[in-house]
Length: 459
Image 1 (tube, helix red, strand yellow):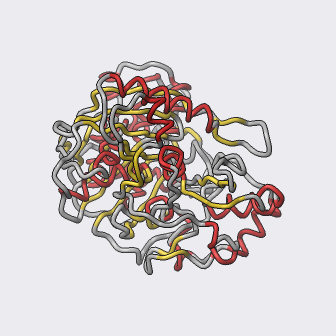
Image 2: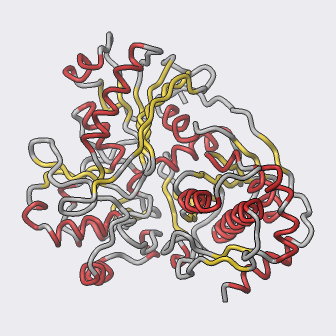
Image 3: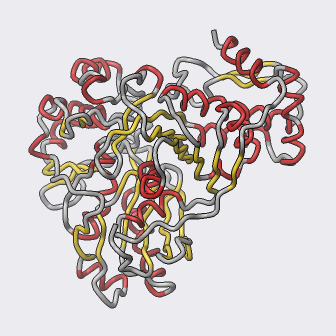
């Protein structure tokens, strides 16, 4: 990578749950300023969709404030996947950006099932709701033909925001390669679905995530009060942003567990030969265009739901409760968020929790998350150390249990900078190693037998 040429980088980071603008110091890698807001979908209209104009207003206000203090001299972008923007001839949205949690009518789902390519071509499993971007585009084209006829360009989501800032339309590989059905990772080109949907001419040109698409447009630069031209980089899918710092300075094999709304596991140095499409295992495409075996479950959303139900707990007491939970055989079974993950057809339930304390329920929830992560890592044949980043890197109970389950060292990178740091690297700055906490595999009494019973309880 090039020598650093920027002191501070602003990152527009739009996740499924929250949107934020972060300014990072290129010398230390530290977040020196953060502004954020909830990302709330609009339920009215033709279908549930993201409040794009509210997000845009937030982004402009945040960039304007941060341009004054602490200042920045480049902008990078990262967003959640499973989203595409349909642009009209006038450069505005021809249709709302659909919320990927919207489920389509059965007849449209059945028709799409006949169109989509095989897993052997795309390494993209059939997912529920709109988690395949190809399914979104088929739905929009089928259910709203007049509106779709006005579409002049299709952009992946991070690149839509780059286009609003620069006027330059682009698509990018990490966003095309995250279970969209639109990409063939083995040959590095669009899949057959693009022609089946008749959208090849609509797809914006593919640019590298590392490309500077252009400076901020003059009218926006004036609104933000930018004193000099500020380049905007093409942008990257958020989980791949989390992966990028590790690709730069770690040697394969290793696994990265990126935690947020989704818990996404990457098996770097693995192969694609043993992926099970029915269990949410797939290939992602990294920032360099290489296929990476991956698996996922909606662990952040599940933990949010469980924490709201359980209430506040004393962490030390919860950690001490692990032994009792294992001895009692108290367990939480998949899934709290149904329809995805390694056990997509299972309906979540508690066993042996009738008289359980809050601390025991919390410990069981952490054990559930560790077991689900262990299952995901097994599905992709992950080897080497396991790096956990994002919110779960602060959950000591989860980390200790995961290390015991996988039998390998777990490295926790606490903080929320994974996606933002990765996106900042697109500008050519050097990665800065953050502090990490090591969790060696420990022998937890009864855990192996508990795991066996957990799997048996799902039968």
